[in-house]
Image (spheres, rainbow, N blue to C red):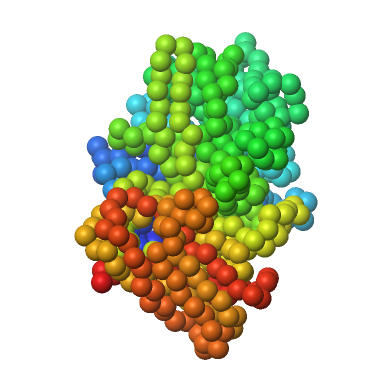
Length: 518
């Protein structure tokens, strides 16, 4: 099975060139990604980026019963490889099934650390179990791609010892000292005993409220998702933050990653700012802040330097709940000056690692959409979201679906966008044809294609338009839409805007698109 999924993943990479957002196959749902650059154990001297996350494969609840890892060579971030299942906690030390609270262990957001023991690299995994006295599981492997085996069983073989709570994180400093972080609503940190990797070092204490929680006074507003990185001598704490009501002109939300920094692994910390906002904040025609992706949800991730570039890894929601999250990435700039750390806020885009922009001459899956809005404000009823307009439908490998992650519910007034495509390949062509693969749904209406903005009022230019009569066969087809490019080049956003007299009815399902020169 592992080889089969690897082969399918490789095929995906060939067909869609990979590296865009989401950067893993559209059937894969890996939230909470913690990225690390480790040496490839099968190719000494070569490095790979490994992403450790939860595995949203239960569909009706968070996470799953196993954790998998994906990796890519640092020199080719389009060549992501499925490295298989690295951990499952469903069985105790004696091999018997663990079943507390009526279900096997769920595995929430994990973290990994590399240490040197007896001159060899060893890897420790915090699988983040929240069941039956095993919240502090620590597992060990000689390889970054596992498998990992629990190494802190209590004598009963069913519970574990240790200090970790929710969303554990590990950090090994340059001097070999080990630190742990955890918390939900309130943050905790401690120096750990390297002999156990999960107990507080003798003579030290847990630092409670390391940064202020979202229900406490203070700017940090910590929610969950602890992660630590060291950058040019500074300790950078990454976490999920609850914004203040009215901050950014929007209601409070925990869909942002933020950072704080310090001269010590346990603080005191200075608040830095927002790394990424999963709501895709933008400015509307009236000058007010608008949400262009999901209105809410959670996110979890961290920073990673690959080569000379820094990236923030996070996740987005797909579907109509929080149970089908997908791995995302965006570039950031990091600047350490004196006592301060400045990290730019990343933009929510379809590019991923393809910061030069997506190629319009190659077929792009509709599920790469980074902008999907409806004719009215999105409302939420946790954990399910009501979408008045377009959204990305969640699909899975085992569904054997003809189309992965289609964009659905394209009602009148909905807009779907992609940032950004690089039109340098079409430089010199005033006209082109946009080939839109879709499924008509028997509704009469139009589809406008806009460049640079979702509407003329927001800087968009209509470059093409297609009509649906409502009488088309309801089967997969491809619309050829003539577009006027005006000899553009470089990076531009593309938007599809839907219009109909039948309010609330979806005109079509969107599957993919590409441009051809005319």
